[in-house]
Image (cartoon, rainbow, N blue to C red; front, side, top):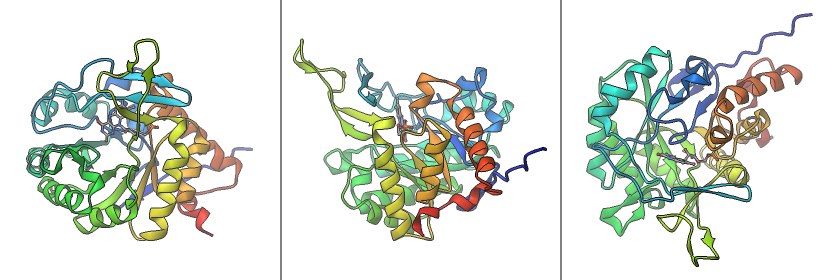
Length: 308
Ligand SMILES: Cc1cc2nc3c(=O)[nH]c(=O)nc-3n(C[C@H](O)[C@H](O)[C@H](O)COP(=O)(O)O)c2cc1C
């Protein structure tokens, strides 16, 4: 007997995607780096590493280290900048048939506006812009945009220059996560991506110095999965009308199921890709199989199911 097909289509804000599994920004390169391992056209979307208006060097080494249940990174926002990306990295992604989410960042509000404006009308393959507000705001004592409702709203509003659907990528390191999410939504984000990395640090006890070149870093991987589930659950409760994208420690299909039940319309796979570059495709297969074995005909039935 042939198992019934599962309808994997979901909608994130105004964007329809074929299935809910995407790459997470910064963990799958700027272009088609994963194409030797994964059919990029088979994923819901490829979210590229955050792009600034201009080229950036990023942070000094060491940039990543392992921890008990995940990894720490202080890569910084190294990258080619939007213009070079459009010329060099986007075309191979388009040829691979990927649906692309362009992530942008800035040090000040106007940087978001500049990066966004360069994306306006650039390619039909860019289906949304993820506004990474989990970066330091030099106009506010280097406090993260995502730790302030008004700075988040300003960065999102400036990103409207792209003319594309906006997703705001928030930091879990704030007591007002749901209020920041609401501010992002009011400023024009039709979806909110939860969560970026959790602030952390590791110290080399022999040298008595931080292990990462940037001293502090961001924790990701299995250690933060419950943080992501809680963030999605709480924001779904507070903002039932706002689309959420869940990210944090997804390495198996059931992790995606959990985030969707918490309220995510789609999920992203990040750190798992470093251990297994096929992870995004494998998570999609496992999610599909989970639905099949649990009599779930449409994956969208799972969204928010934990809210009773
Ligand atoms: C090495 C590395 C680089 C990252 N770079 C970015 C980035 O440029 N922009 C961004 O929004 N998030 C970035 N992130 C955060 C991830 O997209 C994701 O939110 C986080 O790692 C949690 O998901 P995970 O546990 O599946 O990795 C990065 C994460 C890692 C590990």
